[in-house]
Length: 97
Image (cartoon, rainbow, N blue to C red; front, top):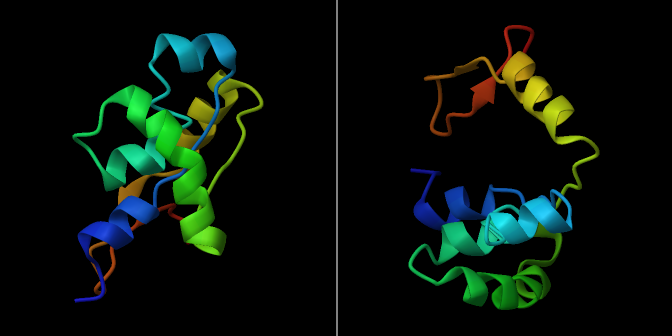
């Protein structure tokens, strides 16, 4: 099939939630791609690996800053409403898509 472990891992997004939240959550948000590619890697290794992964993945690396965490949670809740079961690759969809 078209979907595999690496494709799923690379489909995640690194998001910084600001220094305090990133530090408190051991950088799980801003090293999320590394976490999905190498799930047994300790958090401090994932933080160090992220710049290397970013360079290797190039245009396939995804990163999105968070302006306001509660607004982003609302956007996710409002927009990601179901998982389509049609096709080889299934994704979160909205009722409008």
